[in-house]
Image 1 (cartoon, helix red, strand yellow):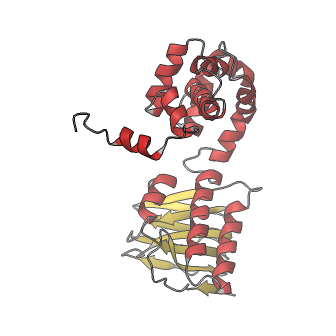
Image 2 (image 1 turned 45 degrees about the horizontal axis):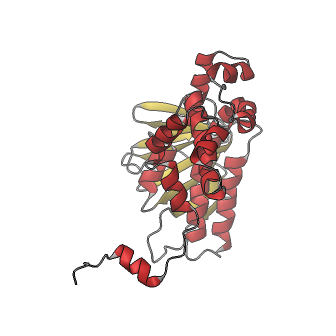
Image 3 (image 1 turned 180 degrees about the horizontal axis):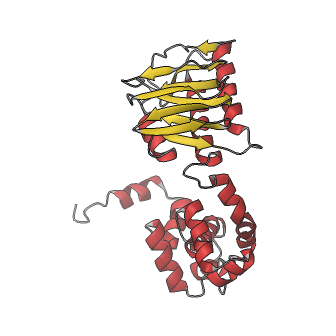
Length: 295
């Protein structure tokens, strides 16, 4: 049975706004020489289809889908006796930016593993919400659309690369170990690579794929994060002591690195986030608006 819902159009423009959502148990051939006016996600539930766009052909077997931008010429049809599909179309004031940041260049074909049902379940959840009619304002659907896009980013695979979740799993043991060992000033790239039983170059490749930075840069970021936790919560500790406690052997290096990354010194950060001294109203006024001593 065909399931198709057109949600109410909210009065206020939303960051992400669903236009249609549904399931087609027997997907018919579609030709759109002028494209579709909204972002269009097409997902294979059963069978296999093929979509052509941008002079390219995309095979869409089960556990795969494709996101098309608005107005992009495309055609699709079944490549198996039965092709069951699910779809979501959406727009929104922040749609362009979010799709660009989370998905990248479009059309974007995305696949996922056989034991991972998060993307399919999220689309089904959005469909059931739309069918219920309880989200007249559209804000809940907007939030669910954001979750859907983040799942495409974290659970989906594109360009023959592992998903973000898979990449994180490959370094998870090291991340947990660093949470315990970051304070060791002798900890470096060699020890981190040894922990995973791989070479330093391969380690940096994995970290760049997962975090966009080298493994050692991640370690420095971790140490600064711990320092930011301790500076306001341990006012009796000097900046030097906190720097040493998070793994910086040289206090001047700690201060310089902190200032470079955070835009202020550790002491300035502590004053910004820590408790402020009580100041009388007239003293505060005098401090903010100093009076001329001759008047």
